[in-house]
Length: 149
Length: 150
Image (cartoon, rainbow over all chains, first blue to last red; front, top):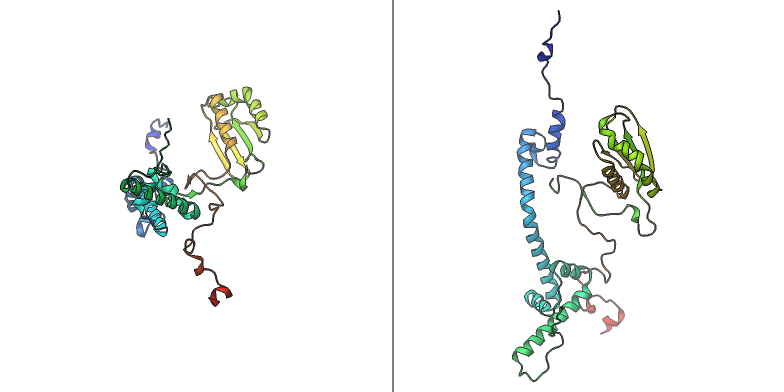
């Protein structure tokens, strides 16, 4: 007997369920508890982990900037300057270094940082002299502005 | 794709390649394709037109051309550190395969995972790294008979 509809009796089976499950579990292996083993719990945890990691990219920038500022503050206090005075006077002296670079200099090149602190201190004194003085003294050397046209 | 969920590495060069002589990290490139199938057309065109040029431009890479029937066309790249990378070239044009081969020839065999920082240095400090006694007066650090006498 020829059965022409035998093919319809054979249903297709899912054969790569293991790998589909492993794709999710591989991101959950360092979690705590059953959510690092059980797929049903891991799916929810992995999705939340991805969402948090996406949102945290914006926070990371803020966090790192705060870290740099803390480090620069500590380093400039060693040289007798507070952070607002250091940063503002460095900007007035046209030293266009960002906080990341200044923090790295404070860690790895302490003498360079000391000279930067001295520059900021001198610019601060010149600012005071210009504001409080009579106008008879010549303007400070580090107060001169270089214009790049 | 979290930082701790997926592997990551620091930026390195294999054995400081490029500091002295530059050694190409691609060891051999195997071009596997079918002589008859339709998706290997680009691969066959590449073999006819551009494979010799590629081999001449990269004399330190060994190019193996293996036509085998019933095979998904692929470029198999083996690197000096043992990494094997397979790129499928089904339904790609000759130019795309050339671009792909050039890209593979420029890579080192290091894993293609997240690189933590886009820079790396073995000697980060020239003036000496900061330590708590860096900016303190040297009377605190110097020990000697002269100091004790005073």
